[in-house]
Image (tube, rainbow, N blue to C red; front, side, top):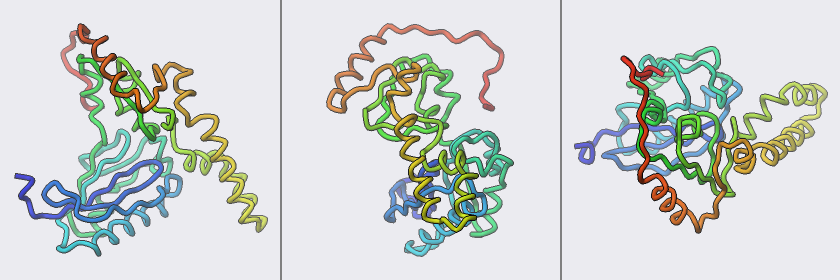
Length: 256
C-alpha cells in the first residue's frame, strides 16, 4: 500500500548535531537530503532553520507535499506537537514549544511529530539485546540504542563512535556562552569563534569517546569494525539461553 502511495511527505532527521531535511514518496526518498548544523541553544534561530530547511525541500519537489512528518529526540507531548522538557540535546526547547502548530501554520499542512525510538519496547523486551554504536550516540539517541540503562545485555562501540550527553558544538555553546559573549562584546569576534572551537575539540577529546563510556560501564567493549560480525555472533551465542521475566504488574509505563 505505502509503496504505491503517490503523496509526498517532507521529513526531518532532528539530531543534536545536524538537521537533515528530505522528502519521501512511496517509501522512497525522492530528493537529495539537505544537511544543516543544528541550532540547539537558540529557539528563534532554530525555528528559522526548520522553516528554511523545509522550504528548500519544497522547492525541489515535483509536486506539492501533503504533510510534514519527523521524529524528535526525547520525551514530549507528541500528540499535540509540543516539544519541551529536559531535552539535553535541545536546551532551547526546555520551556516547551508548540512546534507542530507552528509548522502547520507556516506551511498550511498537517504536521506529525513523534519520538525517534520506542523506549517502552526496549525497556520491556526480554529477548537478547545486543547494541553496536557505529557513529554518534548523544543524549536521547543513546537511550534509544538499547543502552545499559534500558537493560541492554551487551553493548559494543567502534573506536570512531562518539558517546556523550550532547554534541561538542551544542555543549560548548551552552557551557561557554558567557565567555564567548564577553569576547564578542569586546569586538573580538574571531577570538570568540576560536575559543568555542577550542572548547569543542577539548570536549570531544575528554568526553565524546567510547572509551570514556566504557570506563563507566555503559559500553562493554570497544571493538574493531572488522570484528563486528564475529563479536555479534558470539554475543548472541552467549545469550542463547537468556531467561528474563519482567515483574508482575497491572499496568506498564507506556506513557513514558
